[in-house]
Length: 89
Image 1 (cartoon, one colour):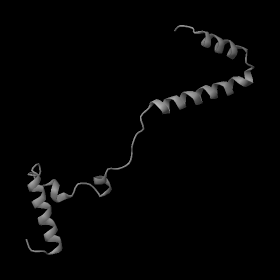
Image 2 (cartoon, helix red, strand yellow):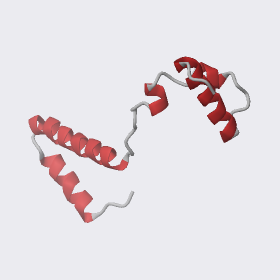
Image 3 (cartoon, rainbow, N blue to C red):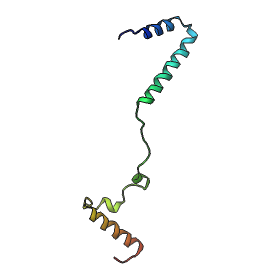
Image 4 (cartoon, rainbow, N blue to C red):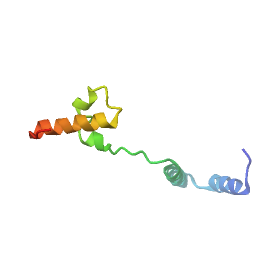
């Protein structure tokens, strides 16, 4: 690794620190590293999706194999609503 003037200056300063200050210097460096890691790491979103918040995929949709067609999905959901609330088609 190339020794830049700043790096050389920092190493000289660390070499002359009293032993009781070294722990504080190390903690300060670790804090800076952690801050840099947080800034460069994309946040992880642990928030559940709407579907997960609703309890997952409804069973009647899971077991029907023809759901790739939008009209089929609309018909199935409409039938289910009419069944539940007693409305005639």
